[in-house]
Image 1: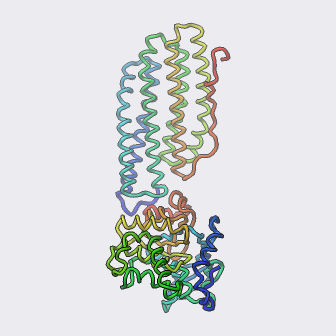
Image 2 (image 1 turned 45 degrees about the vertical axis):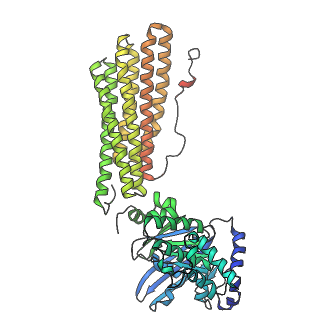
Length: 282
Length: 237
C-alpha cells in the first residue's frame, strides 16, 4: 500500500521492491480501482472549475479524459498529484484516494506523493542537462539507488521502457534538449518512470508531436499500462479511442459520462458526449 | 437528423450518402415491381428495361462505397455518424443485390413465356412478390424516418414470405410431377420464387441495419424462419 506521509520518507528507498511485490499480487486483477475521486470540487477563487466529480480509475488501465477546452479535465488531472497546491487561489473539496489513502490528508508530503505519481506534460520539458542526468535526477534525489552502477542500470532500464535506449545509448552525455520533439517527450516519460511511480499522468503528451512521434508515444503508452496506471488528457478523440480502455467526458466542470472507451465512441449515452465526439459543438 | 456539425461540409457529405441510398431504394423497388409485371404479362420489352437498369444500381453502390471511405478517411466519424456511414455501405450492398435478383427474374421472362406458363402459378408468384416488395418499401420508409418500430416489424414479417415461399415450392413440385412438360417453366418459376424470397431477406437485413444505425444496438433474438423447402421432397410433399 502506498504511503505518502512524511514519516514514510525513510522507507521510500524500498519503493521499487515494494511496487513490484504489489504488482505480482494484483497482476491478474482487472478493473480494480487504483484512484478513487469522491465528490471533488475545485475552485479558483470564486470560480468553480470542477463540480462534484466522482470517478474510479482502474489499475493498469489507460483512462482518457476528453472534453472541450476549459472543461476542467486538466484541472482534475492536476488534482491527482496535487499540482494545484502551488496555485494560490486554488481550493479543493472532496477526497481523492490512491490505494485507499487520502492524498489530501494531513501529513501527506506532496513531494513523496509526486514520486509515486509521475507526470508528462504537453510540451516536452527536459532539464537543461544531459540525457543521462535527466533520467538519473529523480532516482538520485529520492535516494532510490545506492551506487553508480545501480543508477546506470535504472537509467538504462527507464530509457529502454520508454523505447528510447537504442536511439540515445551512444550519446547519453549530450544535452536532452538536443533531441527531436518526439524523443524529448519519450525522454520525459523515461524520467517519469525512472522513480518507478504507480500512476503516470499525461497532459496532452502528443499535441506538440508529429504523427510518427505520436504513434511511438501511443505504442509506448500501450506497453506501459502493463506496469502503470495511466491517466491521459487528450484533445484528440482518435487518440483517446486508440490508447485508452476507459474514457471520461468532461463538460463545464462536470463529469458528464464515463465508461468503456469502446462504448463511449460508438454509442455514448449522453447527448452532450455524442455532440462533442461527433463534432457538433466546441 | 440531429444538430448540424461544426464543419458543415461534413453534413453535406452525410446528406449525399442518405440521398444516394434513398435513390437506390427507389430504383430497386421499381425494378422488383417491373420484373414481376413483366413475368405476369409476358412483357419482354419491360423485362429488357429491368435488365438494363441494373447498371445504375451497380454504379450507385460503387459511388456510395467510395464516398463513404472518403468520409471516414477525412472526418474520422464517431458514434452515430460512423454508424450512419457503415449503414449506408451495408444498405447499398443489399439494394444492389435486390437489383441483381430483379434482373435475374427479368431474364427468365422469355424462357417462361416460351413454354406456356401455368397462369395459376404466376398468380402465386405475384402474391409472394407483393409481400416482398411491401417489405422493401416499408424498410425504405423506416430508413428515411429512422423508425426502429417499423424496422422491427419488417423483420418480424419475413416469416409470412418464408411460409408462402414454402407452399409455392410444394405447388410447383406438384405441377412438375403431374406433367413433365411443365418442368422447364416450373423450374424457372422456382428460381423466380427463390429470388423474390431473397428480396424479402435483403429487406430484413436492411431492417436490422436501420435498427443498428438508430440505436447502436443489434436487433437481438433469432428471427423467425419458416422456409421449410430444404426438407420438402417429391415423395413427402
